[in-house]
Amino acid sequence: MPTRAYTIALANLKGGCGKTTISTNLSAACAMRGRVGLIDADPQGALKHWVDWQQGDSATTTALPTLHAEHANPLDNLLSAQTQNDFVIADCPPSLDIAITQAILTHCDFVLVPVLPSPLDLWASAQTIDIIHQARTQNPSLRAALVLNQTEPKSAMTRAMQQAIAKLNTPVLTTSVRRRAAYRNAVVEGVSVFQLGVRGREAANEIQQILIEVLPQ
Ligand SMILES: Nc1ncnc2c1ncn2[C@@H]1O[C@H](COP(=O)(O)OP(=O)(O)O)[C@@H](O)[C@H]1O
Ligand SMILES: [Mg+2]
Image 1 (tube, rainbow, N blue to C red):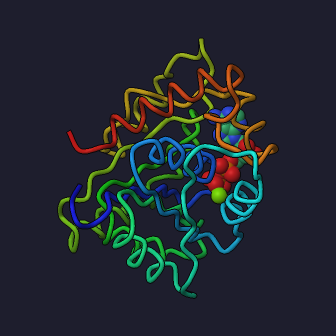
Image 2: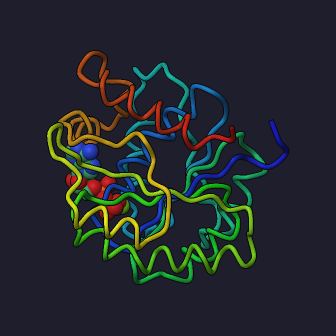
């Protein structure tokens, strides 16, 4: 393991595209490989609630990520988490806090941009991609990819979506996150899809595939 944790940010200035859902489940996948620090940079604090809930469950036997919230500033939490873990996952805030997202991206290895499979959502992600380009002026090795979230099994990529993706000029992960009850059930139960047994198996498989695509080759 390198001295600094391998750091993945989930960023999209638009809300509701799956940043927190993917952060929680990806952190659970990382926890099978090493120590994981989680950063909740969204002032709404949904991720913090999930971690608190999970850690209050004494029946949990799997390794859990640690939420780093010792400092008031998410960037300070990120920097301290990077010295104490093998992986760090940062759940970035929506548009009100562009400066926080910018600061975090200058300290990450990979930024994943979840997008819903619609041209509207893809168009709305252009500003997030601009922020990634700005971050690369200070962090040239920052890797980035879009990940389609809430996809349906038979929905083909429309021409409008293909054009919108081409315009963003950012790779798209081969694995997409399907719309599944398991993701909603996991949140309701305060767990990750890995703790849902057979109910979460397909979701857990796709999250593992996403992690493999995002880890260094
Ligand atoms: N793949 C999915 N399948 C089913 N529900 C999902 C999926 N991804 C996200 N959701 C639901 O969509 C809503 C928004 O997701 P969330 O992760 O909170 O987005 P963000 O953090 O970007 O605002 C939540 O209610 C979440 O449970
Ligand atoms: Mg969120």
